[in-house]
Image (cartoon, rainbow, N blue to C red):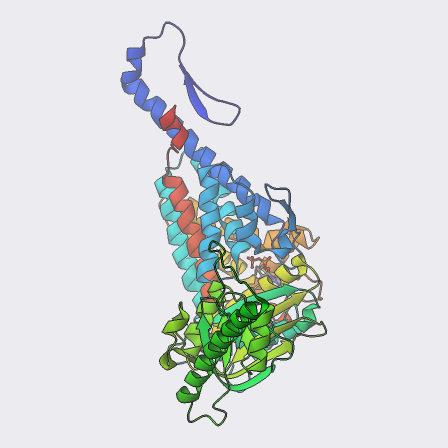
Length: 553
Ligand code: ADP
């Protein structure tokens, strides 16, 4: 009996002909099982590391973009999408271990919003080291325990080498600077957006209040922050007023037009006069509807100077005749507003959505301080902006860009910047990037490993080595000699005690990350280490993957 691997690397046992099947039940079978399980675990580690390695060349300011092809042939560049999480998601990872790593990247994204590539690169490095330890016959649980211990030391060390980052509400310049790496204006928008919705007492920011919107066209420079809701519509009639103050608005999900004879009924009119009479009736009826809406607003806003100011926001369209009547009766209207936006407007303005016109009453109207049409940037496109809503501090970041890819890239970098600002409000401690904090932690962990007398020592040392993979990847991606560069930075850190020395990716002439202003938030970095260690522990615990197909077969 021997153990072999098929072309996919799956282990299987070959039983020589004549060997009694019964033999498999004994100790031999157990041994074979253990052998196979060990082989499978090693294989899981190897497969996982292979998935992670794909991301390695994307890490850092000089990281390479990946060209991604979706199943229907669309191409995107990874630079234009949420990096780590998206590459993995779109890669169509076949095996379960790979899927765990996709989840890993997503968790980092959900919790922190930044560092999604870094977390996978670290997990990959840990898996590579784990594979080597398993090969040396160390039990997977001992490896996991050693990693856990090392991770705890590193996380603690991060806190001890962290700096506090000071900013104040009146002076957000420092914040803008920190997120400004890509684009000054984007940094400003990100900071303003977060400041507008932040809850400083609870030290938290509800990111749901920041709506990211965008439209292809214009240039990146045209991106703006709107303190309210933006809808990609214009007033139904070009002659309707485009700037309304103290607005009372009704939100309709029913058609708003003159009644129409249903097509399934037949109406015979014998004379032109009869037809005209019917038309006039229709018109009257609709005018009545308009009056009803206007009258409501009049009673509702008795205090408002302009009692007649009013606005209809409608999920449906209305024909030219209705539109004309609305304009004539000075009731501005916006038509074809999507359901999601309608809901957002209703919540923000305190309006109740009215599904049947007859149900429209004064208390169902919403209010907004200012509704106006606005042109964004240099383009001719116009949108409606609803500001001064009673119920929401919500803001909209409205991105512009020449094409879909530029637009998505802008959204991604804004999202990352917003997350960094949010994280700093939650906890304003920072560590230095460019691999500086990884090198510092690596030194600390290997120092601690020397004090450990058990087998975990090997796993801890392996963890320390794995931490060096981040600066190595950064150096390699910037065209530097990875091993030499990291060795030299490491030596510098040891001799000077400065834990903020890292990889000079942009060849700025100094490896001082403090000077280069390359920071990462402490919570983000700690989360990266913890999540990567956790997922590796999970993978090491799995000794078999039972695919659903196996049940069917
Ligand atoms: P992630 O998706 O993990 O955020 P990135 O591709 O944004 O991945 O790379 C982040 C890594 O690049 C971090 O380790 C960060 O410290 C490093 N980094 C970013 N800017 C610089 C820089 N100017 N110099 C050196 N390292 C940098």
